[in-house]
Structures are given as structure tokens and as C-alpha cells.
Length: 308
Image (cartoon, rainbow, N blue to C red; front, side, top):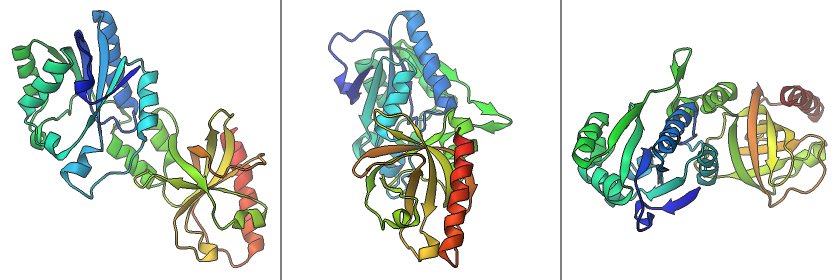
């Protein structure tokens, strides 16, 4: 898959293409259907498929301070889109100037002049241009003017729930990682670099990897979870994960700490990923160390069963 920074990176002599556009945070089942449809239609037409997305999230530029929790970091999003068979991932820098681009100019500059769209595939709720003034109906009218077709991809829903990035963020925020996984089509992932913590877990017999996550990462609600710990080049490991402030020790800093089952070694400085499988329990405060250690032992066994 080719990766372009900005639509201006389209090479000279670029032919016609099938284009789909969106933030695609999470690359959830709805996104997968839209991108998959674009890839399939491009193959039918014998042209390249282009996925256009944006960085940073448009909300942060349009309404500073409103950046939503991020379900997939840019590198992970690119991996997931590549796995769907896209030929090109075009990441458009979403600047204040770009946010003011009128809908008609958005279509002409991106889809017509640079990407030479033969077909544009978008979700039924797609909006574009300054103040999100453009919708699918306008895109279809402009397509007739500029010579490209438009196909809408229906929203994906199960049991009456429409899958969206907003819905998945709400699941993660509530600690319902199973519901999030059902909408994503895979476990929700949080990534980070292992940094030194208080090393209290080591003293308790359960050394943990303390993850420094991205400031906007969609970290699940405080609690204890069963997860898979993914290391670069290594097999996934079952991990019991604690998220919170360590109330037993009067902690104040919210942390993501993972105890990797059946592992011995040094993880400091490594970049890891945690794929959340199940919520085990809420955070609790213990009056003594012994009941805390007993609870951790139970958490570890429940993790082993949940992840196996």
C-alpha cells in the first residue's frame, strides 16, 4: 500500500481511482464495509483504490480542546486499512485553512484535480467542506458535473445498534470492552511505551509493565481487565491489566499497568500493545496487603481462563 501525506502527493500521470473518505477512527465494522466496498469496486473497474483520511482529528481544529479519545493511533489505522486491500492511504493534514475549504472546492481540488476519481464511496452520513455543508446529495450533484459516480455505503448495525466511533468510545469509556470488540470486529487496543513506576507490583510478587499512553488514547474505565499483551516480534501473552490510581496506596496518577502471565524479563523501554478481552472487576481499596495479593492471584487465574 502506498502512503501519501496530502493529496498533492498523487504522482504525475495518476489515472482514475475509486476514493473513499473519512476519519475512520477505529476502522470498525462500518468502516470495514465502506473501505471493502471501495476496494472491490476499484478491482472491478481496473483502477486503484484510495482511502483519504485526516490528521489531526477534525474536531480538534474546528473546536479546539474537543479532541475525542482516539481508538486507533495513526500507524495502527494504516495497518488495518492496508489489511483491507487498499492501494493508497492518503492522509490529509487537517489545518484551519483546510477546514475553511468550501464543499465545492473540496471536491474539485481533492477528488477531481488530484485523485481523478471515477467513483466515490462514502457512508450515508458523510459530510464535507466548510462547516460540514456538503452531504451525499451535493456530492452526487457535483459528481454529475465533474464526471464521477457516487455510491453510498449503508451504516452497519447489529441488534439495533449502529456501529460508530462515538458508540465504541462510549463502550470503552464504560469499560465494556466486549461490546467495543463486537463493533470493532477485534479487541480494542491501547498502545504505549513501558516506563518505570513505583515497582510496587514487584514487591507484591506481580511485576507490572507501566504503559505511558498517548494523551488522547481511548483508555478503558478504571478497573481490572483480562487482555493480550502484544510485543513486536513476539507471541501474545495473557495479561492482567489494572487501570486506575492504585487506591489502596492512595495513588493520584491514573495508570495502565499490565502483569504478563508466565513471563520473566525486562520490558522497560519497549512499545507494547494491550488487546482488551474482558472486564474482570472494579477497582477496590484494601485495608491490608494480604487480601490485595489474594485478589491479584484470583485476577490472574480469571485472566488465564478469559484469554485461553
